[in-house]
Length: 123
Length: 163
Image 1 (cartoon, chains in turn orange, cyan):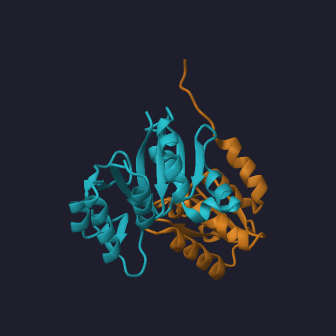
Image 2 (image 1 turned 90 degrees about the vertical axis):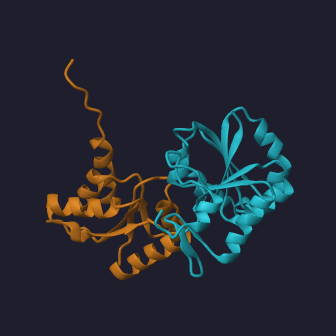
Image 3 (image 1 turned 135 degrees about the vertical axis):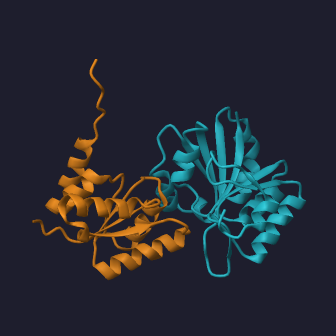
């Protein structure tokens, strides 16, 4: 069992809740994450939602889905005021799962990159 | 192709723009028109961060975009011009005649706004500004992604937030 500090997962639609529930199903560590969706929110509201999630959870790490996405933009704005905040963008299940199980964000990012593979059928 | 998409979107450059429109329309460049962003290198870097290297991003003020609009139109690549609010687009239309169509791509909830579509919330004043754009001869539609139908202004203003 890792002691990964709680982190925020933020993204489009149900991405964040989906990631959180997948981590729970695979490793029983869904409680490592607070899910934030940008659905229906303007830029100021996304930033406020993330600020609130950071404040209520004590998290110092935000995983986001798309580098150009509005959650990433909002997270970077928060990071400007709080340089100790870490933002990992382009996050998918292997990265977030590795963080939940190991607690090391740099290693989790490496594992996420390594997991991305194109599998072709037999020739 | 040329600069042919004029979009009002309070998120400015984000996933829908870069991926949702960028890939199927093969966007070669974006023009972000916002007086504040045009004056801030940090803001520009923030918006440039997630844009693929093959897509250029130009930052301009309203006055600068009005001066350079013909240059953007002369670009052979397909481009999209973005403003973050209706007022900025109206100022641009007034300063740079010839903009014939504007899409509302996303104006999200804020106190005082009412839901018209799931991605468009408007105050009474913003609705009047859209009507004024239409009265100036601009075809105003609402469309978040290219696969969705472009809804005419009258339909947008009749919406109750469920569409």
